[in-house]
Amino acid sequence: DSGYLADFSSNQTQSELFPFTIWTKMVREVLNENQMQLMTNPPCGGIFFLRKAIATYLKEFRGMTVLPEQIIVGAGTEYLYGLLIQLFGKDKVYAVENPGYRKIPQIYKSWQVPCQYIDMDNDGVKVSELEEKKADILHISPSHHYPTGIVMPISRRYELLGWASRGENRYIIEDDYDSELRLSGQPIPTLQSIDVSDKVIYMNTFTKTLSSTVRISYMVLPEKLMRRYIDTANFYCNTASTCEQYALARFIENGYFERHLSRLKKFYHAEGERLKRILKQSVLLPAVSVDGGESGTHLLVKVDTSMTDTEIEEAAENMGIHISCLSRFCSEK
Image (cartoon, rainbow, N blue to C red; front, side, top):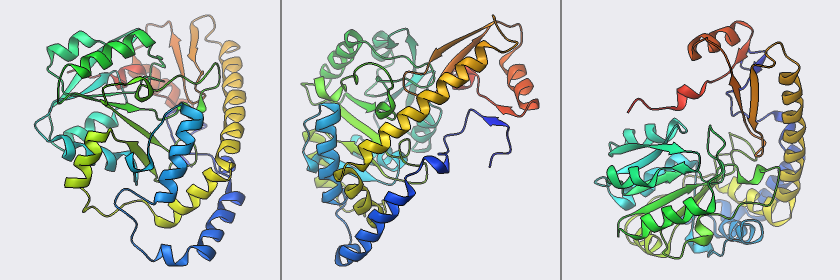
């Protein structure tokens, strides 16, 4: 419990949204039927059963044709970023979106690798800045940018793929963190699925869709990087819980994950609409416009006021409401 009347900055999952009954059933089945496997160290890339289930899911719901062997499972995206840095080398220049999710540059800086902030326009990161700042590895969330909510159009996606193809050491990390929770329109094709140069590392996590405490994330490596991983990083022990990996594989394979996502989307849609109604009826009207909500996980509220961001946050805090203003996600460079 955060102690707030309303906390709009937390990524914690509400307990009533977690499918405890089904998850308990999956774990019980694993404990009964996979006892020998549970006592065996999993491959460095994760349980093959789970990697196969993820590959099938990506084919059916994201239009991606990948081999289970290309998928690396780990306990959270932070661990996977660390693996990538070791695969690429610490001499590469990493580029992140500005504004953007604050944890990403913190991770790169903790590894002491060069990190550049790339400004955005209405279509996403500016390709010209990537060239100016001599970036090698670009980290983006094209299907739903956080916190602006921008969905990158196909023209900018091809521009970025063109940029990546012009340098041997250039790669794009596609963070698809909440694509499953898109509420309107057709699912947006992933950058990975339109990449013909094998320059995109697709990354996703189950922490958004299941729980922030289920530490299972995965990435899909291009063939060249997969070979490098097998040659240089295969001595790592897999960090994700073996029992949870088997349980999640069953959860996906038996169709429970798809049904859970359907339930989640209905909940987030209803909550988003309710919040919009409250904002429209509030004393802030007509000083407020509300953007976003297509993904179900966050809204961007614009306030016409002379107050500073700090003053807005403090005023909300005094009323028991925790919010984050957009300036918090911008770098001073």
